[in-house]
Image (cartoon, rainbow, N blue to C red; front, side, top):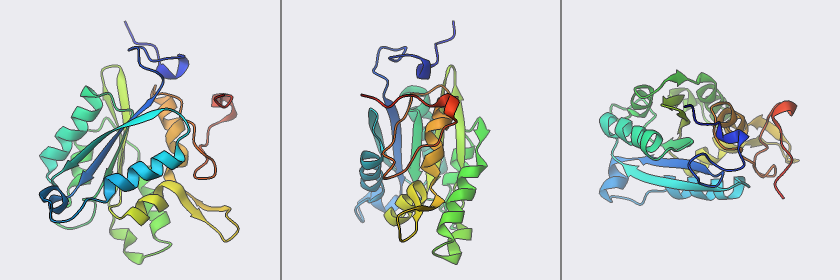
Length: 215
């Protein structure tokens, strides 16, 4: 029997509340070894805490920059812990040790190239070396569950810019951030309904997919 889609239910089919489960993965050999403090996970948690207005919880992982480890971690988060969204940070450049995109593609069911294209467009507003970034986004399907996996940059400032987008001097959105498209993507793959703070990032949905705000 097929499990009912969670975004059509007042609660989840497995008895949990309608919360978003997010896997946060920081990929760095040196941070994992304790050479320096990891800043990726705290930056992601802070931004999500400001941006999300619906229930969510995080599963955090700090791992080595190793393709097999990355793929295994992503698989465990999606298949075992039923994360709806997985955000990785680090390991997306051209260096030999940067293998996050390859490890992500290895566990993918579908590619979502628009996310990587938009991230590079945002970063090119600041540095020409943004063309060296290789972030990808994919859907992983496991049985009747699916998750969106997105590779983010490694620097906290770049993480915020790519998620939130760019604003002009008046505060109007100049270049949309990628997170504006995440809630509707989660809807389409059967995940929980995500609400965001429009002052941080406004989630975009077609009118037919919009709900009244939570009380």
